[in-house]
Image (cartoon, rainbow, N blue to C red; front, side, top):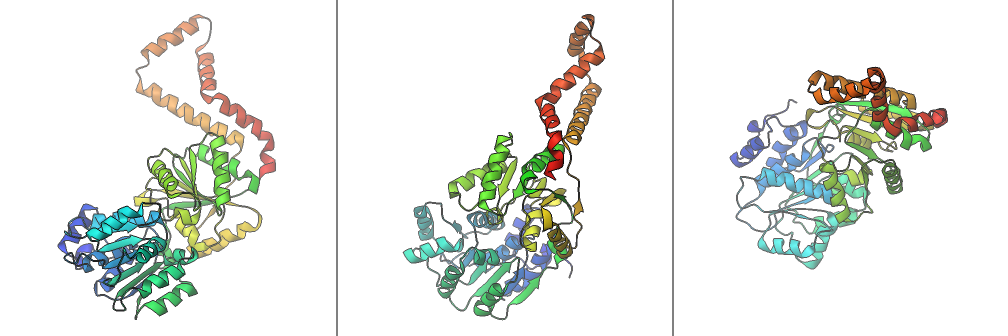
Length: 445
């Protein structure tokens, strides 16, 4: 099936105008296939990852369904994390720019509940929230669901993995049976299929092929290293490639904290993101990362849900994910908006077999690379400095500096000696540190 243009999807003029403002013309595969069914009021199961455009798909359907003259809650969108709820809310607010009378409210933990209660009393048609906070409002009787016509389970697999099944079922029981149920998930586990059987009626199944779930612009590499060598190899790869913004994935919270401490001790602007952080801390970290005040963000898979930063140059799989789908989620964080990106994985011992499995699953090639030695890094850095020098010379405007060098030459120094001394100064102590590490290279990998 070819992708549709938004103008062919029978959308309201208000939504069409908002989509034009957002710079979209052609719908993504998941949008092309799911929006027509959702506009007809049918239940839908969509298998799609983050970055495929599913938020706009169910967001458009919800906005087109809502009656702006009815101030009650008509649509509920459940998300696994605060970050994803905020992201979905921001997207829907952009899409509803020209829709008068529609109020959208994100509800999640970490934000004062009184503020949310006041907003609900004023009238809200679309609620976007985490299951826990939605349940909280239901128990306080500040949220009524008897007028809900549509419920969306976004990242349903993640919500189940995080233990929200009971909350989801309690929420579903409070919503009228005459409703539209939309479910999006990256995987279709038995638990997900059980949910669809219990709560959906003749759902339309939309599944993207694996080749559509990968990101072809991402160059993929792997390095075989011993576990204790990973911090050193990560540092070298960031330095040698002059990476300004990167996302590093670890499999555990403890790993995240340990790596952040190591990177900070090496002088990098790094911070971590995982489920144990307070919401205020998570917000601060993400704000700094978006502003590029943090150059390396270290995160777990669940904490990274909802991260959508356009300039991430490289994703590092510091630990190989246990799930092939998570590998796709991770590398999809780079190469956004048509930009190139790199995905780099570290494998230890038998993990090399996981690389083969991932290659088969993604139908892509992950290229083995040799870990750069300390002397390789020194050589490349020297070349970069010399290229910079050439650029400065070609640009001219060196008059006063020429005068200073001429004074040194008058003191019986050659111009070559002066240039070499300045290069040595520019290389600084880093070069000496790398030279000292040459002797331990062979023991690391």
